[in-house]
Image (cartoon, rainbow, N blue to C red; front, side, top):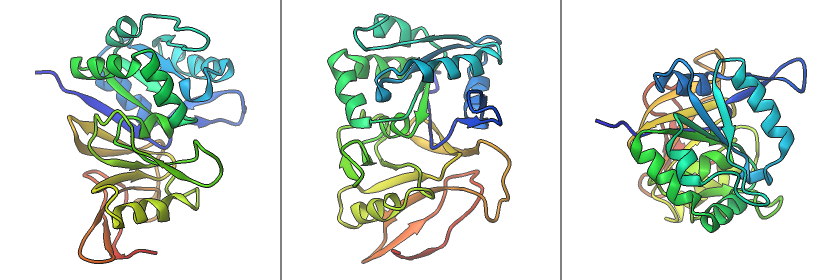
Amino acid sequence: MTTRRIIATSGGFRMTANYEVLDVGNTVREALRLTGKTRPRVVLLNTATGDDPARYVRVYAALAALGCDVTHLSLFTMPTHNPFDVLTGADFVWVGGGSVANLLAVWRVHRVDEAMAEAWNKGVIVGGVSAGSICWHIGGPTDSFGPELRVVKNGLALLPYANGVHYDSEAQRRPLLQQLIADGEFEIAYATDDRVGILYEGTEPVRVITDAEFDAASGPAAYRVERIGTGTWAWSPPVGSQRVCGVGNSA
C-alpha cells in the first residue's frame, strides 16, 4: 500500500560558519531516509524565488554530499523538464521558500500543481520550507504581497488545513493566523517555529521533527490552532513534538 507523505517546514537546511555552505537539517534527512533508497532521486524547485541559480547551487552541493542524485525543475524562462515525468520519477521533491502566491500562479500555468498531486499519490515524498510548506495546504498568511501580511487561500489543498510558518520569528504571523481561525476563515491550522517541520502521512500529522537537538521544554515547536468556544484557542502540537503549549485566550 502506498504511503503518501509531506514534510511541511520552517527549516530544512541550516547555515554553517561558511555562509555559502548549507548543512542538511534533520527534517530533510528524515525525508531522504523514508525514501528507502541508498541514492535517492531528489528534484528541487525554487519557483518561489524565480528559480534563483545561487539557491539551487547551494542545495545541490548539500544534497550531493549525502549521495543524492539531484536535479531541478526550473520554470523560468521555460520548463527544463516535463513536470509529470520529472516529479513522478522522483523519490523526494523539495520546494524552496519565497513568494507562495507567485509559486502557485506559475505552477498552474505549467500544470505543476497536477503533476505534484500525481507524484504525491504515487508515494513520492514532497515537502518544502515557508512558501514550500504553505503550498501543500489550503492556504495561510504570506508576505507575497508586501511587508504587511495577507492571506492566500488557493493552495494545492493536499492537506485540508491552513498553515503558518516562521511562527516564532516573524511578529505578524502568529496573531494573523489566530485571527483567521477566530473569524472562521479556516477551521484548523498547523504551524511551525523556525527549524521545525511536521511529517504528514496521508493528511494526518504524525511527527514533529526539529533540524537540530533542542531543549524539549523551551525549544521551538509545532502547533495545532483551532477555535474552542468563544475567543479561545488551543495550541497543541502533533505526536512527537518537542513542546506542548497551553490552552488560553489569544494574545
